[in-house]
Length: 68
Length: 185
Image 1: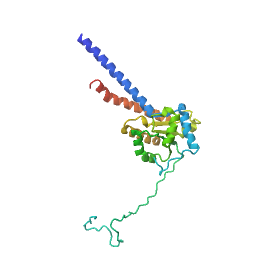
Image 2: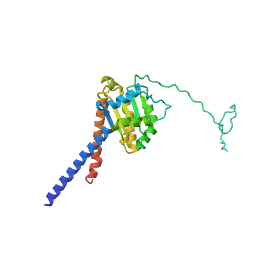
Image 3: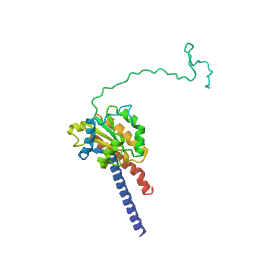
Image 4: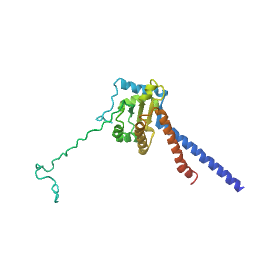
């Protein structure tokens, strides 16, 4: 009976470890792709506004003497 | 009163003009010709959007901005003022809480896709990071990446494969460190 219980505990612990691993990998993956976020057509309006600011002269490139 | 050195070697040559104590002596600056590498048209346009949250990321970015600027001197960097950043984020609410943001536009991709319809760059959302070390690591990765991939014909693929590689490294890291701890190792 104790053998059986031991097996069950091992399987449960193994499943928990695997579940945690999958959760952690997924969490890191999401965080990484949120940190380095690739721009596509969904973000076109954001980028277009920035580009318009440059084209209209509203934004000027930062020069060495400028403030950060 | 300044101490005078007593030694065999005089500090000033005999025929040097007398110098008042406390006067600043300007050392001759050796004029070194600047090495200017001929560079083509800029590949990237970089925008920094920071509405001014008093965050770790803001402080790290400010401290390292000069270096980032120097490393990207071939590209134009545009700094949005605090007010302009606030207004901008107000119009694009998905960006709230993610700034400081470094937006990199790939001008080659924009030209290829005739605008910004497909992939056209990336955002580095520094505001989601919590510790100075994380921010610095991300900033260093950012500083390295566009320089290394400046000539890349397909930046999107490069970034995706780099992220995948980072993901694999992260997985190995978890396997080596976290799982043994979780299962009582």
